[in-house]
Image (tube, rainbow, N blue to C red; front, top):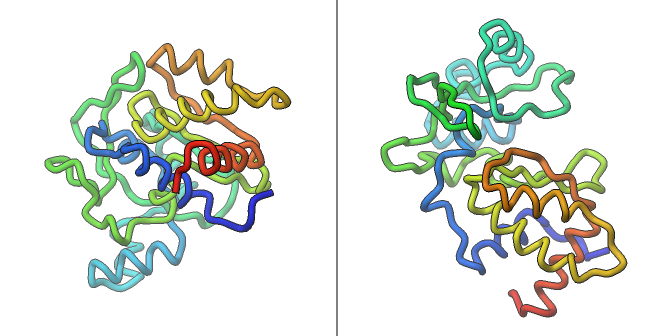
Length: 217
């Protein structure tokens, strides 16, 4: 077990080390998503915008259960739904519906964008105060604290490059049976959307390898 570290920060620093960035991103993390926000997120964003918590909640958020009911009634397509949807009083950002078309694999769906995403510059307008979920994307430590989930859409540079390096490294671990076959198959197809659950201990081993063998950091 690694010493207590922020795995999200380490993984994103690895991406920076290898030169990965979102400059050529195709908006995949800012479109047709369910983006949960907590009180700390709302406090930071409302402070940046110069409005009260109540004003922010009313203008920019809605309840998750309300959104899911409306989506089911209208047939609205979304890219991801967290497994904890039965929880009550979870607030999410209200995405803005547009006539733009988003390519979801071979399907085309109408796009709804994060209210703080600037489509003309392809940048987040509240980047320094963005929600925790955005800071962590495309990674997510599951509630069991033992599984690390990697969100993968074929157009996400960060997760795509991470998975390629990860598979290459852990394939050399003879004592570990992993999901590498599925990941490699998906990477070759170049058209996929999936969440890959990976044991946290294996992610830690990968990080240790990068630090010791490739002299990262």
